[in-house]
Each structure stands twice: as C-alpha cells, then as structure tokens.
Image (cartoon, rainbow, N blue to C red; front, side):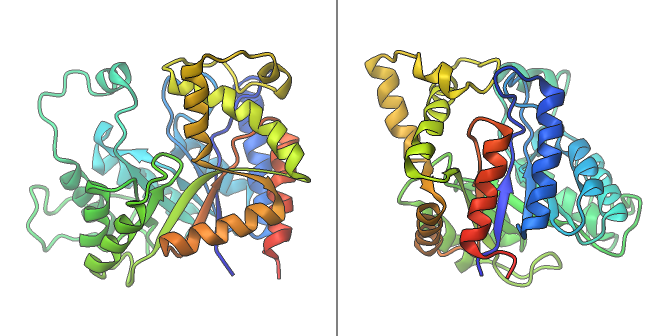
Length: 334
C-alpha cells in the first residue's frame, strides 16, 4: 500500500473567513485520520490572504489533539527566519504531548521580500541554511559531546522520542542536507514538475547517510490534486484552481479562494492562459480512479516511498468528498 499524505493549505473559500477555514481544516484532518491517510501537514504562508495557515506549530498542536492516529506535520517551517533552538523547543513540546506523531518539515522559502525583511529585521548576521539545520538536529538529539558553539545547551522538554525530520524543496541544497544528515526528503512536484526531479531523488538516495532520525532513505513527492465523482466535475472544480493560481503566478494576492461561479466569469489574457497551461502540469485532475492511477505512475517515476496530495479546490464539502473518494480507491482502510 502506498502511504498517502495530505498537505492542507487551510484555504479561505469565497464567502468564508479565516476562522471558517481553520475549523474546516480540523474537520478535514479528522476525516483523513479516520480514512487511513498517513500524514497531515499544514504550511507556513505569510501575508497570503486566501490561506489561513501562517503558524503551523500552533495549528499542529490543535490538530494533533483532535485526531488519534495520523501523523501531524509542518509543510514546512521556514527555518532561516527563526532560532533553531526555539524551533526545537516547539517541536519537542509537540512531541512530548503527542509522541511518535509529529513531523518537522523544514523549508527555505523567504516568503517574499517584505516578509523576509520584517521577519529578519535588525539581524546583523545570518547562519547558513545547513548550519541552521545542523543546530536543530543538535537540539533534538541532546548531543553534548560533539563540538558546537553551544555544546552543553539542550532543548526542553527532553523527550524519549523524536519528531521525524523532513527536508522540503525541489532540488539543490535541501537534497544535499537531507542525504548527508540522514533525513527524509519531500520533492515539490507542485513547484517544479520537471524531468530532473528523478535525478534529485536518485542523488538523495545515492548519497544518503543513516542517522538517528532515519536509517534508510525515505522520500515523497507532493502534487496538487483535484478529485471528484466524475472527470467533468473535477474539471469544473479546477476552474477555481486555475483562477487562484494565475493570480498567484502574476504576483496578485487574492483575498479568497474563488468559487467555480466566480472563476467562470473570468476572462484571461494570452499571457494568463499560458500561465494556466503551465500550472496544470503541477496538478492531477479527475475522478478517484484516474487520480489513483496517475499518483501511482508519479510514485514510480520518481521512485519515492510516499505521495502527498494538496487538495486545493473550492469548498470544504468538496475537499472532504475528494479525499474520501481517493481513500476508497486506494483501499486505505484495508
């Protein structure tokens, strides 16, 4: 059976507000837990008016308390903005309360010029991304024997278990860090659906070094996924996805995730139409059986162990129905 995961953006649908979106995320997580999904992640998205998840750690604590089995994670924490020590403390607190259910996904996205500026205001020096990751790992392992500038410092609370650590990215530095430090890796197909993605995963596996976090390579791909009863229904839902994505791709900041009705009224320039064509390559759209087959093909293509779907389509009821249809197609509960 393929381990199937969900990355939920906590979309603020047209006509809803942030509270509505976050409560809908809770219900979607509870359903995913019941349906047999493996992991449920939430992102760190700043100054994004149509997305409610800006602080994944806080949302994770609530989701973990409202679910029973499913692993809860960040997709991810943008580490360059923060103190590695504080990140380790946050995730040790999560792990202390919900042992063996917490994933720390680490990313490197600056989040836009102004966001990057305000989150790093008055910082005179910045550590390299790899050093930040090394620091987090040090604080999560109680290592006081290896040479470190804060050698005797331990992050509390001390826990007998550790969160799983995932490096998130589309190649480059994240792949190198994940391999050298024995961490799991998620490839962002939804960002770069490129042919060299298979080389990224292959390079990770080739250079992987076992660690206390992961004894053997463990990888996943993440892809936008739109699932409905029929292909025609899925294509209609995808119109809203197209409209939302073209706004983001043309540097707009939509106030909400549009409805299908709103999307149908849009008229696009030739430039915007080309953007839509390109973003469609980042998504799988169709009925549950078709989506299942395409996800299996994608897993085989990349040679990964897990698959993460991103159900960015309109309507909480539609998203709940979509993940239920897919779970049945995969026989997750058997």
